[in-house]
Image (cartoon, rainbow over all chains, first blue to last red; front, top):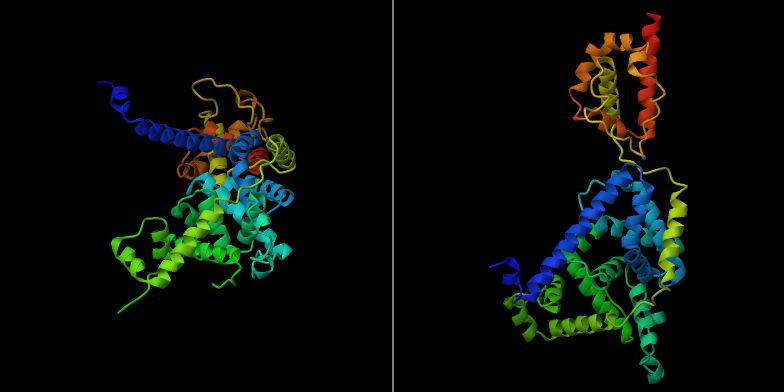
Length: 205
Length: 182
């Protein structure tokens, strides 16, 4: 019996295999591009930019909540990655390494701008405001994004990476330089604070 | 003794990854149950916070901008420790002296991205007046080259950065100059 025949009744297996192959191929493509970059091939870096620019831009957007700064920060993150790629040794996945650079870039940006991370009270939606406004999806999205943007730094980073980028706890821990337990605790605090912010309650940590 | 479970464990409960002991506690503990409910509710909210998607052309624009800014940055290269550069330089000198390794057994086209050329202005080996000088110093350099993990000399030299290539060229010129004054 052929392998295809064995797999055919279980399409999920085929999907899993395909996903695994795609992931393996992506890692291999990354490795080739990185090695080319390390030999001085600038064009190889463009392949990495093409592959990751959406994720990095969205990560930055979640941090700063506006297109202009997110675009600048994403570019800055890629430039930093290019300057440092000679030192990349493959101890972690390239994506993990790149995310870490992007997170640090965002944190430095916020620090230099002295954007407030706490408290949340000022931007907490007033429960007495018009119900019609509150149920507008766009407005709700904006409110949630703003509330996320005002979480304490580590909670915000953890929530963005885990929920919006669907990374595993282990990947987030590698990016944040912390442990899986800390990641879970930070995420739990982040969700609790987010909920309180959205219901107009005072945040606590 | 009644103890609340940790935030880490409560997160496991939210994600459906907690063990039975934690689940039993949360079921019977109003405070922990309330916190888990809040976290679940917040998680639902996050799913509704979609980002505004930029115009499709934005991605091309951003790639071009990054490429333009990269043009002002020196090419990225793998950095080697100085001892490695010195060792490779020594190996190159030995190879020059013995005529081994510079030309691969199998003829291969030059790489378009080769950064070598800092010393490629040297004359061909059969016309190089410095070669006899190098032959004299080769034995002393051989001890250095044995520590180099460089099975293919041409490949190693091809991987040198501009600075390393220049250092190699300078070292070769210095040795040749010394030999000529002997």
